[in-house]
Amino acid sequence: MKTYCIGLSVTYHDSALAIVDAAGDVLFAEATERFLQNKRALNAEPDQLFRIPELLETYCPDPGAITVASNWRKRRPLYESLMSRLGLLSAPGLLKDGIKRLRSPLGNYQLHHMMACQHNSIRRAGLNLVRILRERYPHCKIRFANYDHHLTHAAAACYGSPFEEAACAVIDSFGERGAMAFYRYRDGRLEPLYEARGAGTASLGLYYMKITELCGFDWLKGEEWKVMGLAPYGRLNEALYALLQSTITLDGFEARHQGKKIFDRIDRLDVFKHKQQDPIELAADLAFTGQRFFAETVNRLLTHLQHVTQSDNLALAGGCALNSSNNGRITQETPFRQVYVPSAPADDGCALGAAWLAHHDAHPAPPSPKAIQTPYTGSVIAEEAIDRLLRFNRSLTIEHLPESICEAAAQRLAEGRLVGWLQGRAEFGPRALGNRSILADPRFAETQDLINEKIKFRETFRPFAPSILHEFGTDYFEHYQESPYMDKTLKIRETMRGRIAAVCHVDGTGRLQTVKQEWNPRFYRLIDCFRQVTGVPVLLNTSFNVMGKPLAHSLEDAIALFLTTGLDILVVNDYLIGKPRDA
Image 1 (tube, helix red, strand yellow):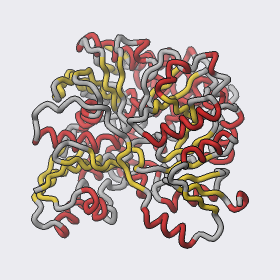
Image 2: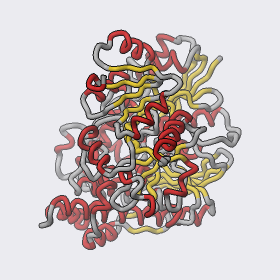
Image 3: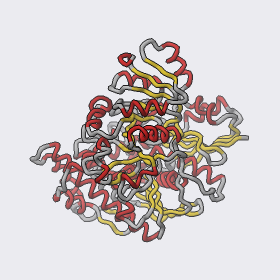
Image 4: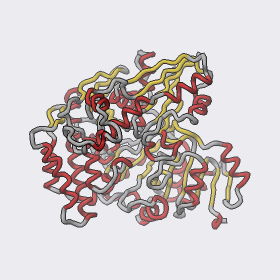
C-alpha cells in the first residue's frame, strides 16, 4: 500500500499543491499560477479540478492512503468569525461604514476583503481533490490535517534546509493571530518561541504593502519587487522615516502599535503621495526609506532571536523572506552566520510545509541529514508537445543537438543573442533558476535596457540576476554566501562590476544565484561553456515571462512568448529553435 501526503496552500493568493511520498521525498510542488497562467492565481483553488487527475496518475500511482493537509486552521480567529456573522465579509459588507477601525496601515475594506477571500478559500479546501480521489481510487483511505499557517511556513524552511538545528523566523502580512512567529528547530522538531497575537500587534508585511502603495505600485499584483528595485535610486526621507519609526515599537519579539495617536500617524502616511516633488524622484525616496525601515526592524528582531536561541543558523520564511535586499545583509547586521531561505518562502511554499508536517506526524523520528531541497519539482515540457512542434512546424528553424546543446547555446550567448532556456522540471517558487529562464551575456550594460524593452516590457529600474558558478563566488562578490534560490542580494566587488555590467544594479549589488554541478548539471555546464568562450563564469538570468504573467508552463506558452518578444533563440531540452529570419 503506497501512502502519500498532499499539501494544499489554500491562501487566497499564491495557492499551490505539493506531493510527498512515504519517505518524505518531494514528488511534486508547484504554484497554481503556472497551470492557469494567471499571476498569483488570486482566489483559485490549488487542487484544480481538471489538473488533479493527471497529477494523481503521474505522482500517486495506486494510492492506498492519502493525507490531505492544508496550511490554515479550520477554526478561524474570533474577529474574523464575528465579522463574517455580521455580514462584513461580503460585497455589501465592504461598503458599510461605522465599523471600528483596525490598527493597520491598510484600510478596513482592504483587510476585510483579504479576510473574506481567505475565509472562502479555507472552506473550499480539498473539495476537488476529494471528489477525484473518490471517483478514481474508491478504496484509498483519506484523512485530513490542517495546520497553523506560520507553522507550515516554518516547516517549509526548516525541513528543506541543510541544518540539523537552527533558529526560525516567519514574518509575513498575517497568520491566524498575527504576522510573526519564531521557533527553535532541533532533531526534526519545531519548538514555538513566540507568536504575535492581539489587535495591537504590528505587521511588517502590511507596512511593506503600504509602502508599495505609496510608491504607486499594486501589492495585490505582488509589486513589492518594484520597491526593492527602485530603492537604490532614492534617498532617505527623514519625515517618513521618523513617522514609520513612531508607528511601531519593538520589545524583544513584540512589534506593537502604541499610543492613542496611532491612527493619526497612519493617516499621515498618505500625505507623502501628494508631496510637491517629481513623482519618480518621490517614489524612489519613499522606496529607499521604506526599505531601510523594514530592514532595520527585521534585523532587530532577528538579533533578538539569535540571542534567545544562541544558534548560528537561521531559517527564514514568510512573504517578507522574499526581500533579498535585506537577506544578503543578515549575516553582516545580525549575529547569524548562515541564512537559509527556501525557494518558495511565501504562501506557495506552505503547501510543501503542510505536506511535510503531515509526513512528520506519521513518522516522528528525526530526519536524516540531507542536502538542501531541490527547487526543480514542478511540471515538465510534455514530449507530445515537442513531437507536435516537430511534425507541424513550417516556419521555425529547429536543430536537435543532444550532445552539444550547451556549447551551441553558450556560443550564441557570447555573440549577444537573447536566449530562452527551458529544461527539465520547473522551479518551485517565484524565481527562474536555470530551468525556465531568459539568459543573456552579462558583460554589457546596454543588455539590461534591451531585455526590459524588447522582452520583459517593464520598468528600466528593475535589475537582472547574475547566475554564477559557485567556485567563482568569492572572486565576484563581497561577503559571498551561497544563494541557491536567488534569495540574497550581495555587493559585487568594485573590480568586477565592469565585467558583469548588465547584472550590476545602480548601488553595485546583484541578486545572485549560486550554481553548483550537483544542483543543476546542465545549467552549470552551460555557464561553464560560456566561461570557456568569454572568461566570465556568469550569465544574466531572468524569468521566462513578460511583466504581469507567471513563468511559462507549457511549450505552447513558451512558443507564444518567443514569437511575440525580442528573444533570438529558444532552447527546449536538446532542441535549439530559431526564428524564420535566422534561416
